[in-house]
Amino acid sequence: MLRRVDKHSGIPAYLQIMNQIKSEILLGNLKAESRLPPVRELEIIFDVNVNTILKALDKLKSEGVLMSEQGIGYFVARNISVDPQITQEIRRLVGDLKSKGLDLYTSLLLIEEVWKNEKL
Image (cartoon, rainbow, N blue to C red):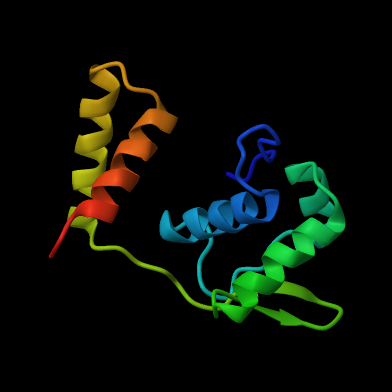
């Protein structure tokens, strides 16, 4: 479900929009060839300037996640899939983090640091 951008998160609004759209595709809520809401409707949903919406959509288009048709709108170009086992592991990890009282931002910081320092 697309939601208002958090203007106090420190994450640029266009990145939040990109991440929300990618998440909806990953979760299967937006499938290949699904049409996104019109840009003016997205402006209301995300509560940001139309130029911010267009920047996010254009970046997703350049990544091959979205495609557009002049005068018609933006569409999901392809499904993004993740191995269901990975999703299950993430759910388990999130449950553990929550049960230990860690908030989202602290958890993300920890994951980011481990990610940067983990050698394969």
